[in-house]
Length: 436
Image (cartoon, rainbow, N blue to C red; front, side, top):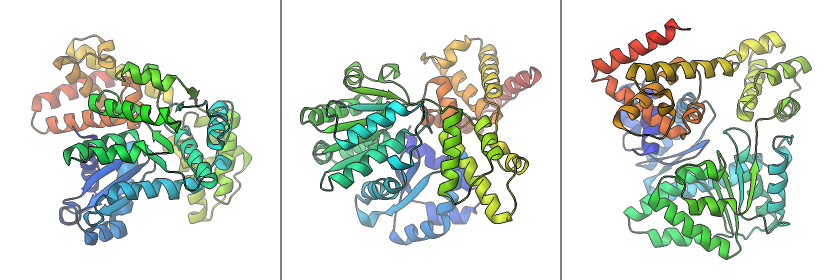
């Protein structure tokens, strides 16, 4: 199942609650997602006319749907068929220009949790450590890996404006290679990437489990490494923990510098909140800053989102910001993660008990039909009963958020035609509710 297509189908499902059937069929028929990253999506429209309408009227709707799916803000770029391969180029422009100016080293808040990764990124960007090759920065979503990747690019562009700097996501690399093979342009694909002076790839774990993609990436990596070109990768975990990544790639990735980014400590969270507020032109009261820092502990992106919401309220309502008002504004972000963890364990245990299989098998790698089906059901119920974003659900099962989305979409489709499955989900949910 194509993950980009799954995402787009889910976006259209959400949009159907806000837009008419006529509007969706008129403006979105023939549209295709041609690139998706951790916080950006490239949509190709079949004509420049549709592209203009989507950009002018419906882009914010798409961004809202993506936020509902992934619990984070997405940038959306719309291209059209008239631009040929413009989908890739447009995404490159978005990545290179728009974000590099915002995500610089100066704007990165350094703390104990990210100090080493930050220092290694600066050393690579400044060219002081040629032996830091490759540099792989790993950590959970929303902790600043992509920020450092853009900061490296921004710094190198300033000092070496003629360098061919290639930056993309693991998923984009995968989709573009598949497209190149389909149209017989694999040689052009290779020339494009193997001619890079600097090669930056975000979420490299996405290539795991895909034999042909890993083969091409391995050869691209070797060509660049042998030529002394700088390679920087990010991943949601260390290479040795990516189960379906080939051993030869694990060895290549691990041969350089591995830099971990952990969730920020309290002092760093305080600094992030103050930094974000200052950039948005306001100084938050100390007690409000402390309130946010004490409750949002795992994700920099979520912390920054909280600050945006509070400041938006201040601007629109012209009201004083207090702890009470801040709590009301961002109450949905203050979810008890321990409670969520308890709920997910209960959901997994009850689903496993219903299907008479060990609970550990649901989070494991076994793929018998019975286990796979039960796993899909448990993922679907977690999404229904908790406030966890897809990435967090994926972390429970050691799977990518697109895999989680595929499971949810699969069960949603099956429910439409299977009353037996619907009844099973109702029974499992009732068992869960009886124990909470």
